[in-house]
View 1 (cartoon, rainbow, N blue to C red):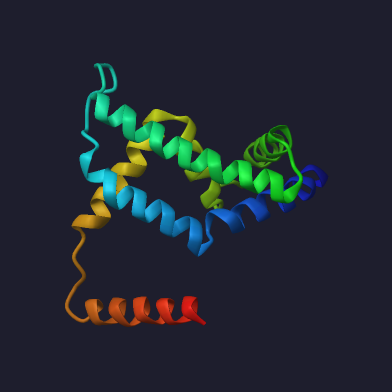
View 2: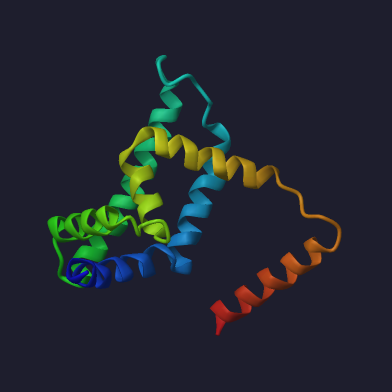
Length: 147
């Protein structure tokens, strides 16, 4: 249990970064622009070159955010990796959004799944009455960010 207590503060701060409006907007904008261009292909076959370009762009974006985080938090990559390893070994990493985004930046298959998830969200249409709730929520978020 002591190892988890050591790891948690690092991952809690990383989770704050990955769930911040700035980062989620950046991910949303990137995926909104590129996810529709990612082609589903059999993993055993050669992948479309555009998929690889988009993956590299996503990886670069996430790496830049991590580099800024490490500098601001005065941490090194090994400390973050070790914290992730310890929490994952504890089997308690499911709640961490940051793990999904990090894995998608380092594992091509996970990236394809993330892109597919965004494609699915783009095709989702709210049920009658939900659209109004979403518009109200979005306008509240914009007002909160302007304040």
